[in-house]
Length: 129
Image (tube, rainbow, N blue to C red):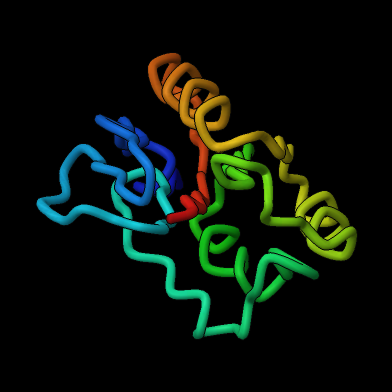
């Protein structure tokens, strides 16, 4: 049996500017968002109590892990102010997920490159105002 989620393409990040990101297939403009094959949604840091430091925690990536893809690109913000906890990287690696942690503009370029290749990727994006 082949899961449908692996057959869906990852939406392209159409535009990025300070505090705003547009994702293919969504009419919304995101400040922060999570993107995965077949969808995207706003990422509200208050859901898990995330702050720039100590940063992205395992609870922040659980949702995208459930989409069953192989690579997660984490944007650290335009000025790389958002940190990523070592326990988050360990959590992802334990689930067999390749992790790339980049400055936001670099993360968007890498994400779009992987998406264009048809890689089943997930992306969590943080854009600082």
